Image (cartoon, rainbow, N blue to C red; front, top):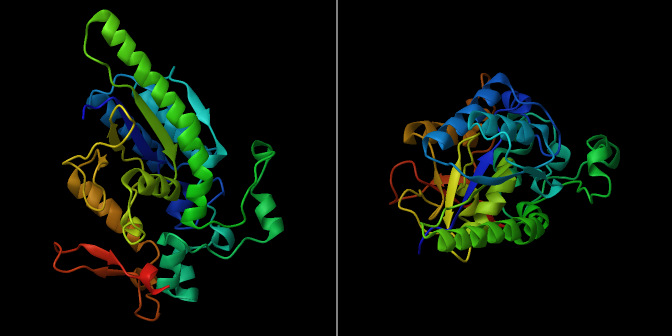
Length: 308
């Protein structure tokens, strides 16, 4: 199976609400200076890796994802690459958790419950009241069936028309054009790249479908800020397994130093753990992530989905 296209998934850089450890969802906080630097670093990594042809970048309607894409392309000196925007790439809606501190929620509701809201496939947070939900919307959402809360499955359902429609059509057209040019000019087939700049849970839903992951594997996907997650696709636009992929992934791989990646993913899991705060909370010991033996030290297993 020869690579015929590349799909690069990119979580936005660190935002103001990431810095404050707040659930973001459809709220629209800006990037921090750290987030802007992360976006530029992602562009530098792709440039140094030899990515020379980006057909299009797809973004959510969130400022943090859009500016991440701008900075990425600027660093790659590809400011001319077209961008497309769609609400279907917006972050999963966090409902009544929107704007709340993650560790405070764990202290109030219990760590396991917040982990289920954050990582399970089927459980949605409590819905946001209508007035508060409407306050998150402006002219960019005219005619959009905005949710009041979403599970990951609901997020995946509204994402799928984009993936199977606009994204698949653009990739198929680029792959076919590259094949024709190669045949006419008698040279190797060029591999076109596409970038998706979005948020953590949308990318988790997309990776779940790309990799065909089970419900208990999906919560183990940790998506760090602005580290490119690279997929090579075959002529049928199916992911090609890679030796660089780390479980639970089998095809996608992160373009990052392993130590930096591991530290970033560990910090993501710890965002909701109020036991690690300056004033550790007293919550029941139950949690959804447990060490999985006899896997390598530090390997985790998700146990909450089966218990529901």
